[in-house]
Structures are given as C-alpha cells and as structure tokens.
Length: 467
Image 1 (tube, rainbow, N blue to C red):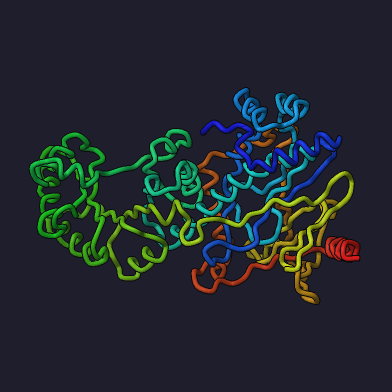
Image 2: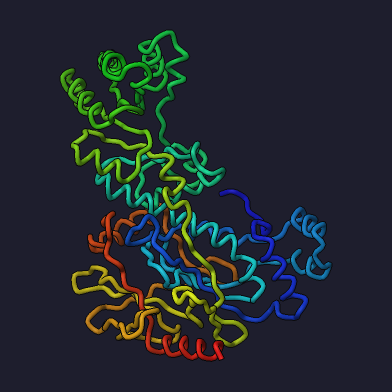
C-alpha cells in the first residue's frame, strides 16, 4: 500500500486542531459519523469499500520529520508542533463489514476519540471511503450487466493520477475478476491480466509476424489484438493461422481482443470464423469505452463476448465522478450536537448511534435500515427522517445491528477477511437485495428511518437551536 502520512489532509483540519489544542480542548471526547446523501449513478444502493486500507493508514497515521518541518514553515504554533511530533491516532471505529451495501443518510462509520484526533483524520477517511465505494459500486453494476462474463479493470491509464491504484482493489470488491494494474495486483494479491497494444503489431513488418512473435514469447496466455488493420479481413484470419500453428505444437491460443468498431457485429463474425476453423475454445475479449449500459446492450444483442475490459468509465466513476460522503460531528464533551440547515435533508442526526437492517423471512433485505441511539437494544418502529407522519413497522422482521467494533485504541481489533472473501461477501449481500433495488432505471428507494428516541432527541435539539 502507498505510504501516507498525516499531512495527507486538508489544511483546515490542522488549523482547527491547533485551535482545539491552544484552547485546551484536544482531549474532549467526540463522535463523528460518516454517511452519504445520494446513491451514485442514479442507482438503488452503494457498495461499502476502502475500510481495510483506511484502518491500516490510521494504525500508522503520524507526522514525520518532513511533515513537521513543513508545518513549522506554515507558521503553526511551536507547542502544537511539539504535540503533533508524537501524535498517534488512538481512536475507535465502528463499521459494517467491507463489501456490505449502504444507503443514503444512515451512518456507515462511527468514529470515537479525542476531538483533535477525530478531526484530523476526516480528510483521509473521506478520501479512501468515498472513492473506493464509488468504484466498487460502479463495478458491481457492471457485474450485474455482464452476468457470468469475465470483467477486467483496464483503467489505470485513464485514472486521475494514483486513483487507479485503489480503483483496482475497489473494482475487485465490486465483482471484477482481474486488473491490468501490476502494482495493485502485487500489493492486493489480485490476478494481473493484459494482452498487447497496437504498437506491438505496428512495430513488426506485418500483422502475422507480430502475432507469431507474441505467441512464441507468451504461449500460455496468448491473446491477440485483431483490429490494428482490418478485423475481419486481416486480424481474425491471421489469429486463426497462429492458433493452428500453436495447435501443431500442442498449445492453444487463449483469445482474441476487439478494441474498436461495432463490437456486437464483429464479435458474431469473429466467433463464426473461429468456430468454422474448429477453434471453439478461443475466447473473445472486447474493450473500448464500455460501461454497464454498453455491456448490457451487447449481451441483449447476443454478442458472443466472453471477456470485457473496462477502463475509463470504471476508474473515473462516470458519470458521477465522486460519492458525496460527509463526516459530521454528532457528540462532543458529553453532549449530543446537531447541524441545522434550511434544507431539511441536510439536518444531521445527533448522538452516538447504531444502524439496524431488517431481514424478511426469506432471508432477503426488506428494504429498510433503521437508525437508533447506540444504547437502544431493539427497534420496532422507524420514522421517516425528514417527512412528518411517515413510519414503518419492523416487528415482523429480523433486525440486525450493522455497526461493529473494528478499531480500538488506534489498533485493528478484528480479523480482516481476504480480499477474495470481501468480494464474495459483496456478492452475497447483493443477492439478498431484491431486484427492484438493482435495476438501472428508476430503482426502488430503500427506506432509511430513525427510532422514536432518536427522533425525539433530534426534534428537541432543533427547537433548542432555533430559539
């Protein structure tokens, strides 16, 4: 994982930290919530990702000498700098398992600790969770569209800087099978995958010579790019020639790749040509500006594509580009707090909270998550957080708490699953989500509500601060 120190933050986290420190408030206890307000991609859910990367960062979150020298040059107070020199995050985090599904307005993470340490980690938390959750969600939509087809992340070259590194991990959680990103594959134990570029073919005297040399150099994983000159008149025939030559040596061509043109038409023609030559085992891969809608369309047209290489739309989270996750103070120095707004949908939920998911008698998500105060042991009714007089009974459902202890005293306190197990958990949770929430067009809205006690507390604080 990439090395991140505590100056990987917004400047105002540090200026607030100095104010807390100089005013004697650095050790006041605080509770923050991470949540988001709108599902990405006009969808019905989001996938929670980035947790383990975040926790590993927090275990080693400190200001090194270069950080302190920089902050000294920025004019920060010497006493504050002396404090930051020995700073370590020693807070507590509660979270659902990575790979779970999450829905707008309800807490996803609860962070507890001193006011100064919980404030300073805000930016890195938002940076890790917002981005990876966005990409994992996009990947899951492509997995739904591709069904059992192979999905490969081709996005590193189109990513915003180093975002491609974490995108490879997040895409795997969301359902991708492999990545072209060698560094992400190395660090996260992912399957690395890659074929060839047009430049390799252009560098040879002719296409057939290029195919032969590549097959000789990489006989076990040979995938030939067939659209450099003419897909059906040159590329596929030359690939067939090389495939037959490989068969004579006891080898098999793994696949061909289409990277331009009418992918549905070209894949059908290519499949027929391969099959007519007895090459039924050769797979067809396709790339070129794919997203969940294009993949769905190709399969609806019965395009015989086995492998989808997805780049730009995946790693940049098109069309949204960002998840609007926020980090808001809910409790400080022994008292619950609230953020008011003229927009009622931006009024926050106060105090320490737990989140509950209602499961029906078929083991499916019922379409309801309820937010309660942390000390509530059961919840039988939830109320709409913003619309008066709307409620939803929960008595007939199994109601399961979602926020579990994952970090205490700045140390990871659970046994993190492998990334493969996290991806499997995501698949399992998606299977528990009814289909109407997973459709791309006009998905059903998943209900999020609040308990009686939380509603009463919130309403009391609204009246108090509006006096």
